[in-house]
Image 1 (cartoon, one colour):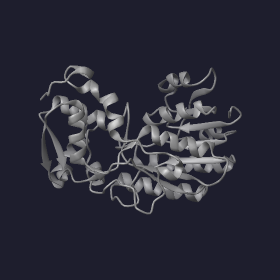
Image 2 (cartoon, helix red, strand yellow; image 1 turned 180 degrees about the vertical axis):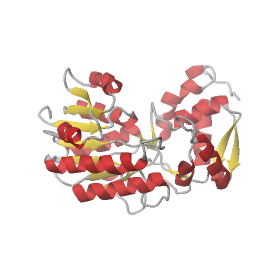
Image 3 (cartoon, rainbow, N blue to C red; image 1 turned 120 degrees about the vertical axis):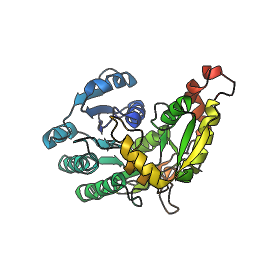
Length: 318
């Protein structure tokens, strides 16, 4: 057990953070969830023993609060990230400035292990999102060279914002859009595998993961079009797939970005022009002691609710 070791997680109330918290709690760590909205993480306290998991308010804009959150911690995990910009909540702040402050605090407080979760393809893509993520990695390495960086592809699992979103669209829309013809390649990775990889780095007693970058992808490489087909098969629905040229998609993204929570932005379309697959020479999940989980073993468990008739619905639906 590691009850004497404290882990601070930034962004721990999010999709990935919930799985990471559960795995680390099972490994016996005491966990601090540094979040802007503590009540959003209260249910995480049930993932461990009484007092083992503590959500608390942390103003990410205040370096003193970040350093105070990290003080006395054995390990720190940064999961903060946004997919679109709204007002002051922009890529520069979320992906560069806050991570730099966290890394600096880790150095000052003598943190033993710091894990930063980035995104696959940020070293190649040309979107503002990708460039900010890549720059974030650079500033972190300068502040804390021993950081372990993980770059996951699209992450799937119960509660994800990828397969769930497109399944919802498939329920209501007569057709689904294939941006750029749906040729972009992905290597979807199970959220449980990402969490296990993070846990393995934390529990490791040697320094084999220090200062290294890992690219996390699942066992299947699929195009956007193939993802739609897999999804539609799982939810037992027939939908037309309509190809949309990049230029048209960018115009649509510009319009949709005006929504409070956009389904698509122009910058996301730019990101889609670069494949999200693990490089041949990269360190991967297997180097982190994790066997990648296939989509077919997980998707049926949480997408069944989108079938007509629910989990036991077996009729082909429109």
